[in-house]
Length: 586
Image (cartoon, rainbow, N blue to C red; front, side, top):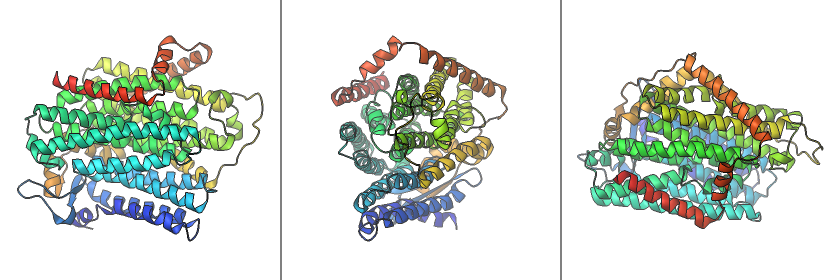
């Protein structure tokens, strides 16, 4: 297939799951298993088409392909039509969303296979709708179209969070999610509209060329709203408070979908706006400093609150806040190694967080328990889940040969090479606390002996076991083959992100070659190995101490600040918007 032919099929990875979402509830009326079959086939088809496109996008140093709907292409650099563009960065998110989404869909339909046909059809519909929105957000090259996919993802997530509305926790989580992400969506829409009013452009490439270093007061307000909106979707501090509730209420596979994939939509939006639109306009450094600050606070605060949790899924949700901070730190370095490491970590996070949430879902499904204090002894009763949880924990810890070792090594190396020792120290502190939180969870839930046997242990279903095994294997595979990932995926992604002019030209012209990337990573690097060993040792020591000591006062204060009130959390978002605008205007 030629590059032009590959570009022409760019809409298919989104159209296929949208069609499956429409068909699933209709086919459920014929047979309760039809939604399962159709949904898996549609996501397999979407993944296959993305793989065909990836052959071109990741060839050589990398390529960018774009397609304008209805052949409404740009004239003299001005675009009226909506464009999809497949670049190495966006395609990495689209492909991971489709492939991991396929596995999570199989696990969800296996875990909830006893539902009636109407419920199964609705679940399959919402699942595919959310995956279609994530793929669309990765491929779009248009601000308003990105807002549309933002809203489609939000609507699907409301349905999935409140799928079991008879549970009070689901109803409360859905309401909080609705309020806070609606504020975020409104911010994204208004910011996009302000840019269009100021520059007459919606296309990323045209906006980047139009800005051309001339950033007005209106532009600053618009980008402040965009950053606040996408940071809310990513669950970054101080826009984060909705995330733990929303990611704890649904079944395990749905929680995995949210924490592993949906939050990354916010990261993609931030990278597009800050690095590929406004950095092209010559104002990148002010925005990068803001993202770095948000990233550091998110990484440390999320890790601290993860350490304090007794609920296993809530612990993992707070760790997602921390991991979003790590991603923002990597992208905000604006260096080849840092951005390549962040792109690599974006994929890795999708893998290990999906694995960990599925483990948590299987524990809840088997035992009915959600509190770590009431668990124990699962290493004997559920050895596969135990091994999978340890693999995911070691991957987040950055222990070789797990996948987190390479991506974290690139981010740490970038901070070290640029002399940002304070930021490196803060990142490593967050890493140590994260390891402590997961080690504590592994001990309490799986490794320690339980005084009394469980009243009932529900058997694990085949689909759930296959998904666990596949994701665990992927965590190891992406860890032992970092050269391939960096050379063919993360490196080209960093190059197109850091060359916004090439991205803009490729979107408007329909095709562009990605400049050669210069990313350096040595697997046996002494610094990376020492950091991995040191953070692991300190994390285990902190976990042992935290198990014995009373809760520290700073963590009690952080917990008290998160009251659970949607009014307070909306105030967090409002204050965050004001802080973002104030920092950018300073």
